[in-house]
Length: 223
Length: 218
Image 1 (cartoon, each protein chain N blue to C red):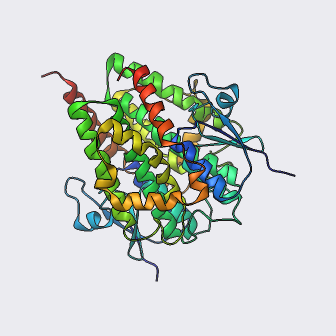
Image 2: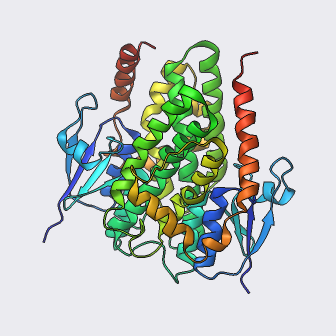
Image 3: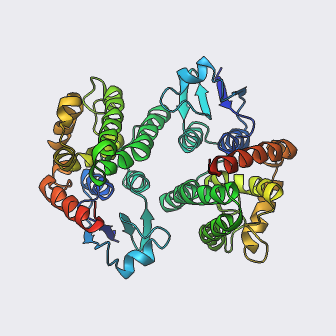
């Protein structure tokens, strides 16, 4: 019998991608929660290069890096495909996923970590990236079209974590008036079965990210 | 109907070279257009409005961006010839993982070799060699990264080889002395016409880097 294990933390948005993909394909798996301040020997054995989560272990063989894991899941369990069969659409989905991690995520995180004028400037930068996502959603329910696809899973953290960041700092990046399609996508994605059932608890996320933000702001105080 | 394939590229770009090697491996005819990155063409801005970067592959009018995504695209479209990724999902995952590792670690480390001096440069050289050593370990005694056949991961790394001469000269060190197995692998790859014809001439790369240093004031 196939044995699938997922090493993750309870709060990591990267790990959620894997949870969603496995559940959307109805793949049974065990979860091992990691404490990143005290990494287990197993984790270090399965991901010696980066020592990070998430890591998927399938029949004893490990795969690391969330997008690499998603592609592996897609190729191993072919039901409910996350990628189109059309090579151009596949390439586009991969590009949006990459854009999300290389531009959208860091710009929102930068804005979240800062305050005052720095935060204002950060929000402006984040919005410039989000405009491209808004444009891409024209005429579509999800980035994947009618159904949740690879790009939705890659960007899905936005649907909840942006709300968390707003609760912590009252910074609003995806405002309804400016980003009507993205706002709608956040709701639709968040409410989809499987996605809805698997968000980490909101209050715990707020507490955690509040602490992270405060720690970051303290670091910036000149000594 | 014949395929129309255009590649917007920059001669010295290791990312662009990856696409050239992939196209050559598959024997695909295409039109090469050199971009001047200080004066980007309308076509480039239209086809890659978000990043405005090369390489961009335009296949029958539709653009594909990001070098490794383009290489995968090429492998998927022209799938009947010279497969670049292995067929086994776990092997494919390994190839993707290490290609991602190269993109995350090698480029930044290497850039600092020619944009910094003194202690910072020494640290950059050390980091660069460390990354290469990890990759050398992954290669082991295999002829190519995934085994007997040249493929995706070899393509991801070999194109940086054309910059080694520039790094060695400007950093005053020998990469071969530190990573002899990796250099053997590189020379093996260069015996393939798809690679030797696609890689930029290392002297031209060096001249380019010297000019970049002047214009950046580093």
